[in-house]
Length: 66
Length: 432
Image 1 (tube, rainbow over the protein chains, first blue to last red):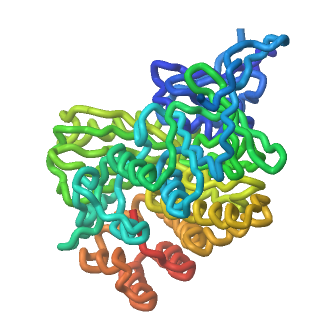
Image 2: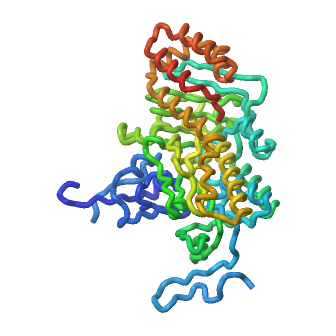
Image 3: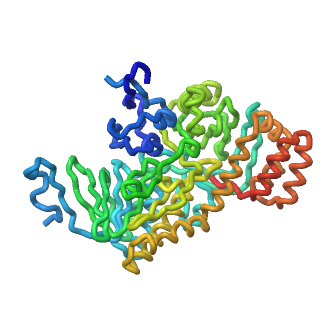
């Protein structure tokens, strides 16, 4: 976390196929899949990157929190 | 008069959304209408239980997260006859391609299994389940679950409303993204080391591959800790997919999709084909759960990590596990006791039935992972088709296999060591 900026995990909906792999590896149950939407609960997310690692299409990204 | 309470949709004084309560107390609610959930539903409905199946999706069997292969063994185990509507491609063998392109073809004269049209297959299972008295509701997403006075209450989001459903027993058959079991205190989370990242196209205009064979491509360039597959689905159409170790992408910075796209470009029989469906999914390949029950709860299918750790196939295993979960739930219903004490034997029953075999195959996979591309090439070149067939069919005794391997692998002592260890661990037949 450079410069003290917090990272936040986001879902890129144009890449996402809503397969739920990210939900299955999330240790904090921060991700919920509903139809064609992925919800990430910032309060639960610990930015561990498991969802980014497993995503078959690279739809999960980590970016600086604004 | 519907069973939903009348003031549904109104807000209470605190501004919280009211929950409509379904007064029916189900014997069992199954969450997830996939192969495991429907097999569980069949078993429960056969036993005259009052069973409800919920699924968050808008169509059963769709989108698939699967290569759709199912071997004859599972049709026999599940007592299901393949039907032409959904068993669309007869499979008589497999072609394995080593890292250097060397092929090993194992083909039988008889049918060994089928590639399915899964949405048709699952709808068939759903129809059979409903015929026996089960009820299915789609676009019903469980958002929370809690135990109260010995039963479970599910809050389910449907049509932008929250409905409460009650059941004595919950079967979590909701796939790799299962949250229902976790809501009820059973941790089914997948570890990256035991999960594969899967990506697949259903392609048409595919040429040059024997349609009666599954085609599997190996190599660290092609698919690190995994393989690429072509599962034909008749008429020059096939599922073309990849599964790689989930942690791979963090090392190589290449996603499963990128690996597959790159590989397809190298295949003359594929690169000019058209994609008619895109699929993705995580595959739980080995992180078996020590505990698969809790009070009022049983987990089955992908949610319970019921997948073959070597090839990642899971339709048959999920159905068998689902059926077992249904049988255990039936026993609990008859006893009218839904505590973990009554149902916890399910975990042992499943390991006795299938889990222990899969555990041995997980050990075998760990050994196979030690093989280098050169080892694979050497094996592909030194083992004849007849020998490969005998190994694949399991018709060779352990001693005969040991002699064969020792003879073939004498030049590669490292391989002998790995193979002997594998034989020592036990060799179970592979079934897709």
